[in-house]
Length: 222
Image (cartoon, rainbow, N blue to C red; front, side):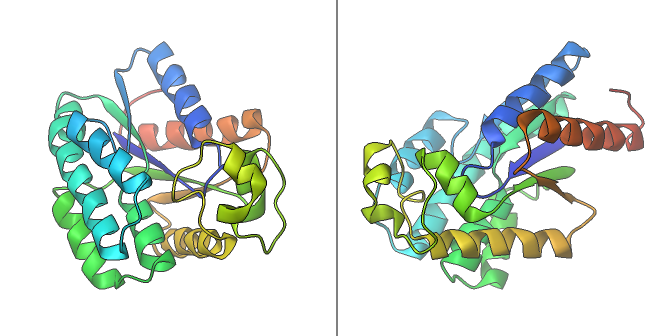
């Protein structure tokens, strides 16, 4: 089973991925946790470049996709073929939301490139951890942000270890969230929206309930 976690910055994906992986392992399943961009050495090198360089949108998208091609071939496919549950922090929906909806690259072309780079892989379940942009950025940067702030000029942001995507203006992050929600509306069977503004425990319980339901549909127990 291939599960991806998506969502705006500060939505708590890292914590929830760990909790879900632990729960599945406790029940005897092999679980592979990974992230994008990353997962293999070449993709990790691309991650450092793309998250810390000033790139035009097309170059940014193509670098993310190059990392995904390495990742899909060398990590995700082999794990799925041996029967593991793969849990990935971000996948193609992030490319669509960030480089498509937020940066304005044409969605039809971007979708085709995502299909090519992922070698046709599509998640069985995407958990969209959704919350207001201001709340998420406040979590990420350690302070509640004004609604009209440009994060790149904020003293709080400067004091944190933030990457290029974190430091973009709040309006950019609003477009990202809007993109995620539009994708969820168009693919309700695959994308399950989780209210990530709640407590860690409440979010964890919601996720576990949905994952168990999907596993039962596949004829396996959790």
